[in-house]
Length: 344
Ligand SMILES: Nc1ncnc2c1ncn2[C@@H]1O[C@H](COP(=O)(O)OP(=O)(O)OP(=O)(O)O)[C@@H](O)[C@H]1O
Ligand SMILES: [Mg+2]
Image (cartoon, rainbow, N blue to C red; front, side, top):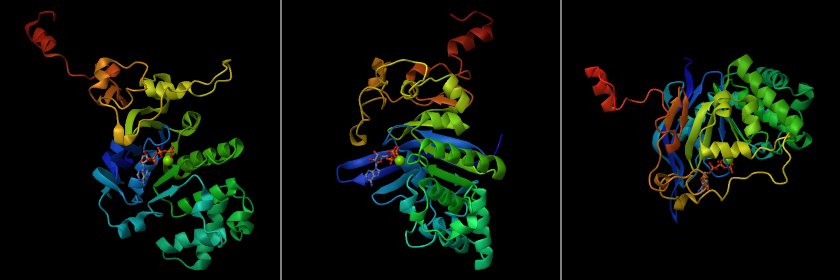
C-alpha cells in the first residue's frame, strides 16, 4: 500500500463561543496517500475548511484542536509551535483558497510575491529565485511568464490569479497541497483547466492534494478518494469509483440526487429536505436523522459509528450495520461450527 503523506486521526476541533462549545470537526480521520487527490465534500458549514485549517495550523481564536493527531509524512505536527508550523507551511504543505485576490498583496507585482516564498524557505540568490518563479509560472500554465512576473494582481484575470496562487503554493515542492474551493469563483472553462492542472501536479510531480469542494461533479472528475462530511463528521468515505457506484449513506445519495442531469426532465431540482442543524444544538442520535428519508427509531437515539462495508468504504449509518464482510461472527455460529452442528 502506498505511504500516506497525511494522516488525520480522530481530529476534534472546537470553537469556544459565548453560546457554547461548537464541534466544528468531530472525530475526523482522513488518509491522504502519496500522489493522490482526496476530495472533501459536503454542504456549507460541515467542517471542510476547519479540517484544513487545523492541519495547516491556521485556526484562529476561539477555535482549537482539542483531540486527535495530524501526521505529515509520518511526523506528528499536532502540537508544533506557531513558529515551527510557519516553517513547514509553504515548504512541506501549502494551501490555496477560493478567492486569490484576498491572499495576494495588491501593491506588489506577483512575481516578487512568489519569489518571497522561495527566499523565506530556502537559501538562494534573488536572481536564482526569479528564474525559478518564471519556471513555475510556465509549469502552471501562465502564458508569457516573464511578462506576467511584473504584473500586479489586478492586471490578471481570476483564472491567472489562481494559477499564481498555485505557483506560490507549489514553488517549494510541498508534499501536500490543500485547495479549498479553488475553482468556485471561476467560470467552467477556467475551472476545467485548473482541475487539469491539479491532475498534472499529481501525475508529474507526485503531489498529494486535498481538494475541498461542494461540487460532486468536480469530485467525480479529479478525485481518487472521497470523504463526505456533514456537521463536522465523516459520513461516508471510499475510493471515488466505489462511492459513485455503490453509494450507501442517505446523505451522499441526497447530494448525488441534487446534481442536475441532462437526460432527465424535471421542473425542480432535488434538494435534501430541511437545513443543516446548528452545531450548538445537534439532534440526539445521528446528526443526519432530522433530514434523513430512511430514518429509523434507533437513529434518533444513538450515534452510528463508521461501518466498513467493503475494504476502504466506510459509512456512518445504522443501515450498514452487519454489511461489513469482515464482521465478527455471532457467538452462536462459532459454537455451532466447533461442534459440527448447523447454527440456528
Ligand atoms: N470563528 C468561528 N467562530 C465560531 N464558529 C466558527 C468559526 N469559524 C467557523 N465556525 C463554524 O465551524 C463550522 C465549520 O465551518 P467550516 O468553515 O469548516 O465549513 P465548510 O464546510 O468549509 O463550509 P463552506 O462550504 O461554507 O466553506 C461551521 O458551523 C462554522 O459556523
Ligand atoms: Mg469552507
